Length: 500
Image (cartoon, rainbow, N blue to C red; front, side, top):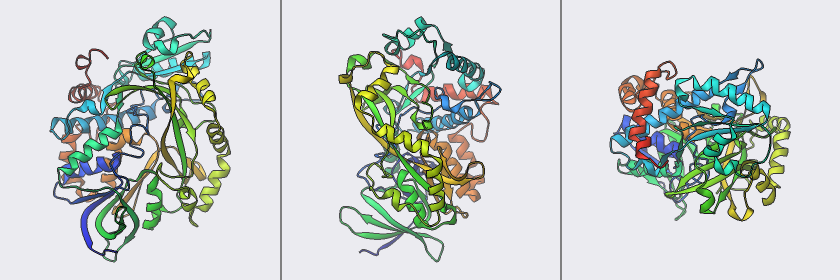
């Protein structure tokens, strides 16, 4: 065992999009701080951030129906969609800043323009979609949204979905051309390549086995080199645990009181991917439907055009699955190992409360390929089994905690930052639209953990994110300005992609 003690300002655990984003922000704000990264796997962006492990929607809430709720009086509440869209605009501004300042090249390696659509069937759903469209299209963030319930128009928008559809049931869709497809795996790798040029030490195949507080207030990490088996101690003033599903066990090891009573519930996902180029060619959009009754929010069915490895792909899903692992590369004992005396009651309460979710997951796991094809045919009536293969997506760990509104053992479907009272350590938990809103989430973390620096950093933050501290909804001109400038910087404007 090597006991060489090495001290650094910041340690980032996990080489995913969150660590990449936090590292990039801190290197812009305080270039002189030393940063080290430890990642268990052999390269960056291999777990939840990987392009095959998430939907790459560039969640701007343009098409996801579960972000807009119908209220008892029949009106549609779009406040959650507005919040998510504003967060995505922050990500776009930061990426544009990096491109404009030569920290990132070829934005089309990670972001491409792509229409986002919502599609519903049945009279009740069509009337909901129309109300949603009316509420959203008058908002500056969702400018350019179109609605149609005319089958001929829909055939132009989504030929593959309309082909061979012979139901007389009403059908409608909304479409907005300013959507994007984001390859978060590629983005993560690009950000890490840039960080390496800034003297950030990135250690792959290094596993953090333990974290504890030293007497002088630093954090000491026991880090194992997976190739040599050697264990070293590393100390830091600030530690970020951004290990996806692996974050909860490390948060528990840190012993901070804020990490008590929190549990995690793993859910895995599966996608169907189309292997027939002729079929792929017939679809050019991300099309989201409505989640089946009783299904969790992350199982909203969608048919997506994706740009992966510089070629167009077509994916349908997600089908939920279950594995007790907290990471795709994790252990079968992850779930049981995460149950501690301080969270066992919370975990049991969640189990009792979510029997319908458990039942749904079991049913999903048991689905045959043909059953999955039937679900796909709701979207693509003419889908042939031989054109589609099954791909296992990433593991997600939903946060379980006690809340005032939900009581004991409430399952959370978002992402959240848990940090120590003194801001010296923070972990990102949960599994939702994390990647798309990474810049907002990490700015919030910086604000929470480094309040003493915020005044000095504000000018630089505003240079990187011009809308910082402002509400976009209340500033329609600013929305317009940001859309145009980020479209230009990221190469998203239609004149740059005439074929799209």
